[in-house]
Each structure stands twice: as structure tokens, then as C-alpha cells.
Picture 1 (cartoon, rainbow, N blue to C red):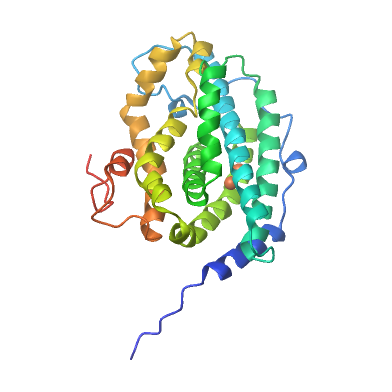
Picture 2: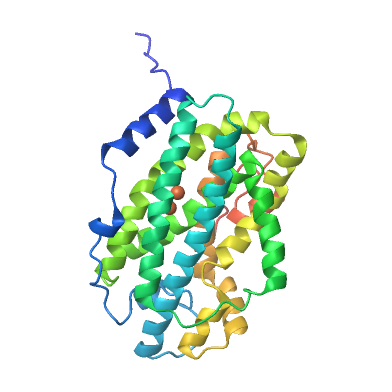
Length: 310
Ligand SMILES: [Fe+2]
Ligand SMILES: [Fe+2]
């Protein structure tokens, strides 16, 4: 008997389903989350701190302070990243040839959801009360970084790839925290709420990546293959900015540099970024057997995109 093949849904159908899912149960974080319940000690367990595995002695008090700083840093990065996404999507909506395209409607859903995420993140940052500052937050550096993010928002495919990275990385970190019994219940609730909506955003980016890739020019394609991994590495490294370590009385840059080399952190980076490469392979942007060197280094995979042993 011949096997029946079920036709894969088209990008249009997938996006229509995402639109329906976004409409089904809109969540307002300001009323849905248990605000005011955040404890004043550690918000994530020691084993989820970036310094886990580093040869330094810290007291419970230092770890508690560091936990609040690391989470606040990640949330702040989240807010800025969501703003980059909003900028890029707003441009794409403004330039869309057909406003009735379900993609336009979905981008409006996504921008609306990101706006709520960012408000919730900012409210939690306020409750966490971080005291350290990011040493990279200087006018000269910001000018360069803003230039880079504007270039990203101007290019659909690069924006989608960075969106996938900017959503996969926090998704993994938020999952680890939400699943751990020692994570503060308020933070765990925020993480679960965020991941639930981000799953749809990831699905959208994966659904439209192939068509976006087919429209991309040679320069943008080269940027995705050879430059995006460096941008993703920067993103990963700055989810906990160097200044956070001052909260635990540790040297900032020295600790930050050491943290980047910790086998556990490196393995987490591989785990968080491999789905981005998989999306590019599935979209036909990168071919198995020809995975570019920067992607191989970022994700620790071979030319076929298969994880390297060890
Ligand atoms: Fe978000
Ligand atoms: Fe998102």
C-alpha cells in the first residue's frame, strides 16, 4: 500500500495559524504575573550563575547579589533586543507591498507582544534593583553598537537570523531557570510567560526565513554566513555584562573573560545557537557539507552541521 504523504503547511498557512494562536489568549503581564512577591535574596540558584565552575570562593550573600545583577542584565539586554526587532519589523510593515499579507498581521502581533515583554522586564529590573553598571555603556562604544544594530534592522534576513539567536539564547537560559525549583517563583512565572509567546516568534522567523533568503542579495547572504556568528557571540557574551561581577566583589573584566572560557558556558552557547544554524540549514541558506567556518566555531559542529564530540 502506498504511503500517504501529508502535505507540509505552506508559510502562509503556518503564519495564519500563528495569528490565530496570538489572538486566542492574549496575556497582560502587568495583571497576570505575581508582582510584588519577588524575594530579596537569590533569584536563581548558584549552579545557574555564569561563574559556576570558576575557581573563586563566594559567600551565599555574594551569590545572591550576583544572581540579581545577572538576571537584571539579561532582562535589560532583552529589552534592547526587542526594540531592535520592533524597529526592523516596523520597517518591514511600512515597506510591505500588501498590508493584508498574514505576515504583516503576525509582525503586528509580535511587536505588540514584545512591547508587553519589555514592560514586564523593566518592571522586574526595578524590583531586582541592580546597582552595577555596564562598563561597555560608553558613548564611543554605543555609537559603534548602534551603527551595527541599525544595519541589522535594515536587512530582513540578517534581522531574522539575529532574531532567532536573540530568542533562542534567552529561551534556553529562561528554561533552565524556570525548570529549577530554587528559582524565585516570580522570575519563574515571568520566564514561563515569555517562553510561551517566544515559541510562536521563533516559529514565525523559521517560517519566513526561506522566502526572505530567496530575496536576499549576495552581500546580505555573505553577512549571514560569515558575520552573523560574530554578532551572535557578542550577544551571548553580553547577556551578563562585565560590570555584574562587581556586585560579588569580583574583578569585572577578569571574571567576565574567565567566564567566557568556562566549559559549561561554552557548552551552553553551543546548545543555544545550534537551533539557529539548523533553521538556516532547513531554510536552504546553508548546505550540509558546506557549513561555513564561523558557524562551525559558534556551534561546535562539523561541515555537515553535526555536533562535534566532546
Ligand atoms: Fe520577547
Ligand atoms: Fe520575541
